Amino acid sequence: MSRRIVIAHRLIPAEPAHRFFQDLINDLARRYHGPVFEPHVTIYARADSTDAVDRTLSKAARDCEPIVLQPLEVSHSDEFIKTLFVEFGLNSKLQRLNQSIRIAAQNSSDYQLNPHLSLLYKTISTQDRHLLTHSIDVPFAEVTFDSLKAVRCVSPTQSRADVEAWRVVAEKPLGSIGA
Image (tube, rainbow, N blue to C red; front, side, top):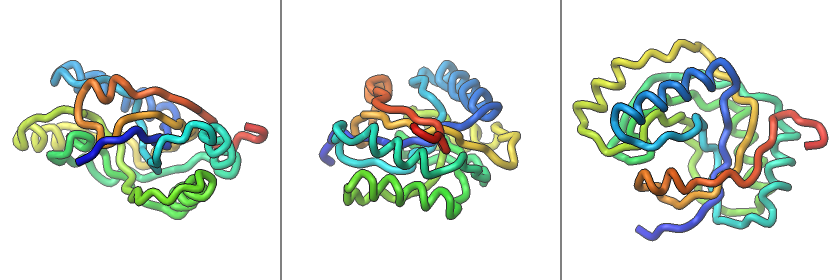
């Protein structure tokens, strides 16, 4: 599989969910020797074209109020970027934001919106992943996401070094007039 540099557009949770997820990510990273990263839901990824990133993010953020998503379950997979994650329900507001970014970016990426917030990036056994899913309780019926970030990263992300190389290239609060 070929690897390339992409811009990932990510929703960032508001407090108190941000602190809860960051503490959980930090704890899991420490326990499993994985990378530490900011909690996020990737809503779109496209080829790296930094010239229009700030404009794209500004337009999308300005046109969208904070988004509320419902956590469905904690799940796991053998895919590095989905080792352990919280799956969220898809709603029309999130789909509109995805479409807005897609149009503003003038990019025909085949990115499939599948809202989830990763908790751990690490290759671990199926048994350990399964046990972890049952040990984590997300204490929120709803999680509000109030900002967007554009992050330059390699795709697919396959290692701790890949995660540690992520760089935020733009950031905007949602619903920000004049952003």
